[in-house]
Amino acid sequence: MEEKVSGRNHVLVVPYPSQGHINPMLQFSKRLCSKGLRVTMLTTVFISNSMHLQSSSLLGSVQLDFISDGYDEGGFAEAVSIESYLSRMEEVGSKSLRELIKKYNGCDEGIDCVVYDPLVIWVLDVAKEFGLLGAAFFTQMCAVNLIYYHVYHGLIKVPISSPISIPGLPLLHPRDAPPFVCNPSFYPAYFQLVINQFSNIHKADLLLVNSFYKLEDQVVDSMSKVCPVLTIGPTVPSFHLDKAIPDDTDNVLNLFELDSSPITWLKQKPPQSVIYISFGSMVCFSSHQMEEIAFALMATGFNFLWVIPDFNTKNLSEEMGKKIDACGRGLIVNWAPQLEVLSNHAVGCFFTHCGWNSTLEALCLGVPMVALPQWTDQPTDAKFVQDVWKVGIRLKEDENGIVTREEIQNSIRVVMEKELGRQMRINAKKWKELAIEAVTQGGTSDHNINLFIKHLKKS
Ligand code: UDX
Image 1 (cartoon, rainbow, N blue to C red):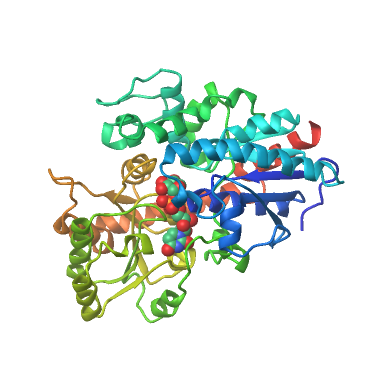
Image 2: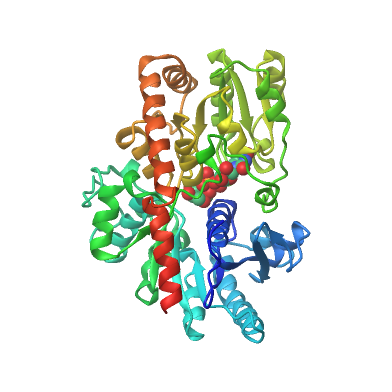
């Protein structure tokens, strides 16, 4: 039990309202609470209503509260475009956040510090209007933030169409860089969103990043020369116990309906005999790509557990679903307890889109990967998975942009059966141990969280 921190200790944590951003900020909030801070984490009114949450709800020791993003009835799906969502979220969200800070400041629970996701940069502006300490929390890997920093400052020109060299990073071909900077005119709103993270960063008192020093040492050193960051991750719950078993409160903010049946199913499978497939909360594949994946999985001969959230089920034909049922080795679910799945010894490989949370979770649980990155930070994460950390294989697309069943099947076989796959498993175990070292008392990430707390106390 750690000492209770007295004096300035109430932190407001504000994630961007999507699963991949809520999860790491919730875990970080819990870590701050375990060190004696008082933490209130915000979600949107829409999320709270859909989950039937009250503003007094507690997630462990983290208190929940809500602000409006302007779309209380339908959330993001209600907006006509990402542009209109972002601009209304800023307008309505700023007002709502001001009211909320006033509410707390009007009683003896005043807010001392705001930890915000830089995808919602306006949160920092509001925090500064109230004279509060503001800490940015980058949910993605440091390398990706360094790329965006270079683009924001015009140090690399967009669109990126030839290999780029950034100190601390391996040479990045366009296919390794975030698509937002390779094709900004295709993603104008997302391009602005990720680049503008740096537009008011000079006002932030601290910059935190969900990574750990040894995982990205050269990148962190390079970034710290221009924009000092503190690594505080990985924010994966209790992975140091060899099993990441989320507590009930971790599942409260699942935006998808959880199906726990995979855990019983996995119990009946031999060690390292199962492929776990999940492409996170946003990636949607075409029917053609889904068919290639389905055929490849059946052809490998391994057992497989495939997460297909509601928004993508229409792209797997009924006929294919029947074939998978008939083969008797596959289980398809809407949303799985991913951490428990990756902790299970039956899982031999993770076929993933390389979202940053999934990548960190696989590293922390020592599971090698087959990577099929799609957009945002995922191609850069996959580049590091294959070439820097050597814990996986990145799949290649054919001339039509499809990853064929042969390519998928061959790569899965390498990871599951071949010497290269065995080596990847050994490497993954090494990263897992280094991740444990970072978050253990006195480790780099633990030390940096303590620095954050010291900063809060002396400000
Ligand atoms: C998004 C982006 O796509 C990603 O690239 C970015 O790094 C973060 O924001 P998402 O696509 O959802 O996130 O992927 P990821 O970062 O992997 O986060 C998914 C989270 O949902 C993980 O924490 C994972 O454990 C969890 N999950 C996923 C489940 O709990 N169950 C599932 O069945 C699938």
